[in-house]
Image (cartoon, rainbow, N blue to C red; front, side):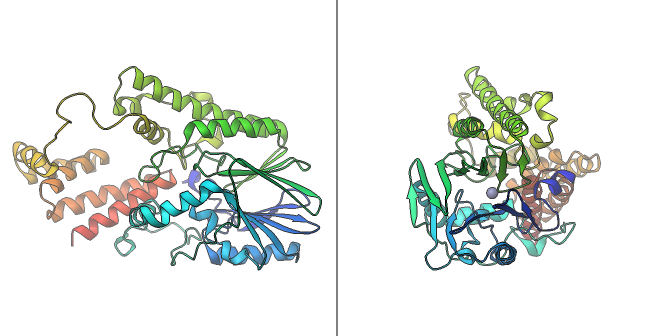
Length: 417
Ligand SMILES: [Zn+2]
């Protein structure tokens, strides 16, 4: 699972000096935190998901400077960037985010609260932890299992850009959608340092998550990368994974990132226009080899096939034009028919077990699903399915796939009880 280790920087937590005034704290939590020191006070960008990790980071930052924290900046509203804020905020600290941040976080906390909580637990592999069979390979400091802390709301919001100066250091903050619609980046023009949040990390980007946020701004992401390239940064400091140094190196990374996103988006759109189905495109669209082999485009966090599916669904509604999909039978009656035709649940399950023994776990899952949908009480089907899900979790090289499979396996074991 080298890819996973690389992405979530399972390194000894450390504070990396980027320049004399910019420090990157990573490895303390899933999200990183960045400190900018000025003669008139400090600016902290992103706060991690974990208040305990944030406390450790703050203690490290305090070894660099004891000046007050004058600004906190959220690059976006994802929990791994905002939940440590209460630790850093002092009386008088201004908190900066885009105006869209407020909408984004409100939707999370209000309209879709229960669904989003469930989706996040699924993605993190924590949907039913008491039924986990797959243990993490090492004690993980990542994720925050505790109660979500109170959200520290922004005190300064803006639409397009917000510029300020602190202790003679200029900060330019730009609304740049990508990972989320509310995303921003922070540019220090004199230092040529770009704090890019989640617009770039050491993996193929998560253009579409399987459960949450179905409409990520993929085209906005490409535009944001073009804006990043135009700034000609000499230091690129993301909020996950390592910093990138040197103008030429950064340009190459950002250009390839942008090319990869455009390639996947445009291939999906061309397929839609050509009348191809979602499943056909998922099989067909592959990154060109020269992009696929780049270490920072490996699919350890985002995945090309999931992105194609997500982009397809962001443009095409649910009916495929084949008639049967307009008013389909309820899954329970349709699968009961299929299971009976196959000679009963035992027949279907013995084929599932055979598939499992031949490492055809996806086939095993789908066969088990037929039986489970026809009869949700079938304990054997739940257990056979759980063990294929365990295999898939252990074999995953993608962080989110690992989490989803692990969660699904635990939920099947729970359902079998
Ligand atoms: Zn993040």
